[in-house]
Length: 308
Picture 1 (spheres, one colour):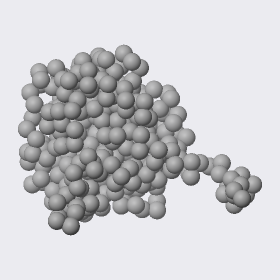
Picture 2: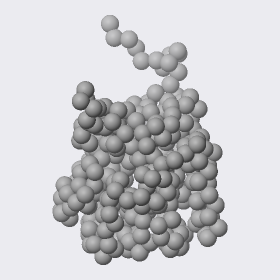
Picture 3: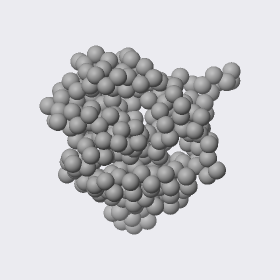
Picture 4: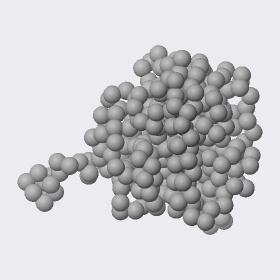
């Protein structure tokens, strides 16, 4: 990670005041993942049932997630798209149930109609991995609702994105392409104060690209928007942790590496980390917030006493 950090902000406009206050005072937020899918790379099928998905979302909050991201379409490399009616059937009952329990819900979708329905059902944020490119009506939905909107760097759907992982300088190009998306969204009425940017780790990027982006997170600060990092359990971590036989570490055994990235992202000033298991990352960002707290003067009287 670069020694230069992202500026701390209150996060996107439209979020509950308590979350904006937490961001402004220096703690990176934790977004818990709820995949209501049969084919997600890490937990596909585990929470396809509505009740299981709701219970998992509530457990994420109990473990420290500040908000929960509910998605009904896998975006793992090579995934085929699910049809709109099926996505709606998976997502809306879970969004509605979690919102009724007071959970701050984000909907993970590329479809404007699903986003609109989810916002009506109680979601407060839209997380669009296509950044508005998959459905041009998404800008209308988020613009008219004033809801917080995550704009991820994206070069195409899952079935083709691996072919698009070609960069001369991945950080410069990702920043430039995200800036283009922000300009285009602003031109059609989206309030950029509501926007979060995501560099899209693993989306049209190989392992080297992902590590390069993580090493230079501060450069995303040139966009002037809060930054979301979604590295949880992704394939580049599995390859990093491969055994002697070269086989990548399984997704459910990548939590320690995920937590390390959460800590590093928090230290770099990320607004939030998106993770499959909330508690380790919540602990990690709490440690970083304690170290970075402005009232600490570790060379002075406020330094904790040494036990004898």
